[in-house]
Length: 470
Image 1 (cartoon, rainbow, N blue to C red):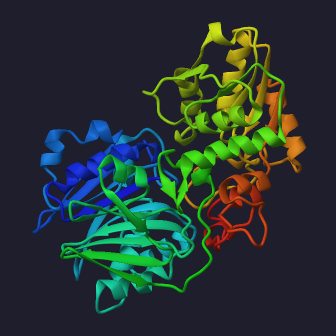
Image 2 (cartoon, rainbow, N blue to C red; image 1 turned 45 degrees about the horizontal axis):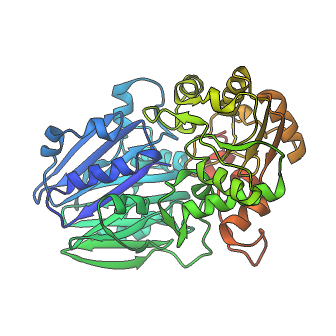
Image 3 (cartoon, helix red, strand yellow; image 1 turned 180 degrees about the horizontal axis):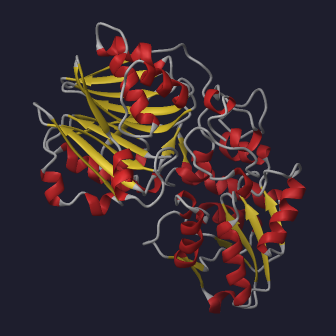
């Protein structure tokens, strides 16, 4: 998850970065930070909380310069408990000073050999101030051999395993990097002659910037003195973008790989209506991420769509809350059913995914309390059977409802039991691929990273097999 954004060549760049971070807030809600460069030195501010509350006018005045990078944090490593000092320590962007000068970095993704790399750097005498893999990448690049920073990056990046999109800032350059498989997104835009790098196109829209293109997998883009150059640090490989970006992560008004996220999510609902129809009075989404899919289900089935559950928009995304206790508490605060509209009705309840069952169980319990006659739960992705090591923190494996169950029918029966739903159906893997790519998953179809559903991990999992990650 996480959000990253960088701008070079714009007055008060930190202000525009803050706007971009606000647009990308759905990607991380635990902490945020900005580092700017004023022509002489770096300035930074990192803090726990939401970007809108952190970057006050006074804070932004303390971040001068025509170049800046920013980050919204969703923790998959480092501190997750409620310790603001420690959380701020692990917040990004991070900066350090090397013989060649200063280097700041913001990272989206997860390094699957972070522990191995960290131990090697520590044996070589490096000291670490945080527990996050971003600092490992920073120290690795800073200590790599090479005449230029590009040489150092090309050497260091070949040692990284896993998923990563990086935005870096030096006293002269804004740099963007995407991992060789393109698992995590990164896009390039223009704004009044300035260059913008961002996790998603929705941040470009918020800034009224023009989308130029995606940063290619295995590519380094360097912005310097108003010009941009492109370099490769590895050979071209088949893309494996995270398919969960289409299902849940990305904002519905973003575009990825020339695909409209909103249209894909409607298509997911259409496919699910074909695979698992139900004779009900209305189609109801679990808002907001279920809205486009429920609309697609409604259009395919001809059953009316109703926004019958109201979302409190002052509560963040439940999936990315760092603890199970917070997730349970926030479901009750976040979602409120419309009793007059729902009482006595039978409904299809649509959500994008179900990992732990926290949201579905609480929502269905509440729906039954107010007199909903039948609740047919429909999930617009397959059962989540495997861990993700590429930037999703989906907690204890024992909490994954699909983990110990072999067939989709067994998973659906178990979810029906724990949630109290009248019936349960997940979208098939082929159905998900048809919605995203227009064809079932096969050798002729572009393949995404779908390891959380299939166990087909596209990179080495060095730390996992060494017993360091579970």
